[in-house]
Image 1 (cartoon, rainbow, N blue to C red):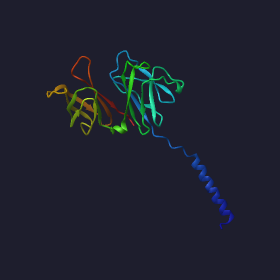
Image 2 (tube, helix red, strand yellow):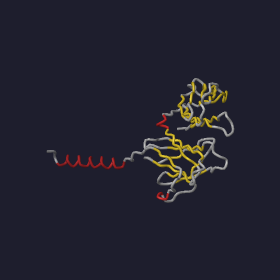
Image 3 (cartoon, helix red, strand yellow):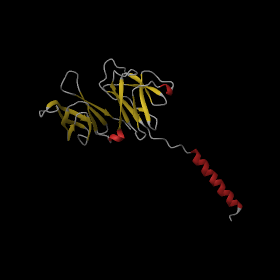
Image 4 (spheres, rainbow, N blue to C red):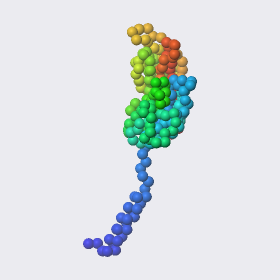
Length: 234
């Protein structure tokens, strides 16, 4: 058996270790971010709305030609909703409010907002794009074809084919930064002939993730192509 003086010394050391461990900062949950895009936003649509995450709401921008600023979201599974005004009581969420679910494993997401005049709470509908689930990395482009046309083309070193109403992940069109040639065309269902969309040059930033959209233009057969880069200094 150890002498009493040694037992006291070990007891003091143990108490010091317990005290120091209690003072250590709690492990922080990884940041979860959201950027908003109102795709094909009508001219009379609101430019801001209130994003409700299940506990609180905040005002967010609804840009149509670029991604919004970065917003932080709480951890866990979320049901996001867009509302025309702040929600004070979480239990009073209006039935039928435009909403979308974020899984607990999602980290960075994009919240796509599209017009929906049939929704009486707010005339929009929502879609969540989970960056992790989509395996979207820096330099790549996640393409969304929102038309009934088959889209194809050569973008730098990459060949692109996106079937109607589907999406495709495209690798970086070049290994470094700079411009690259773009040639895109479309084909209608049941037709063999292809029609040009564009023949131009774009700029590639290997530090950015990109969202690309092919959408229909009112009254025109040729679709519209939009690409939104997401570059973050960190």
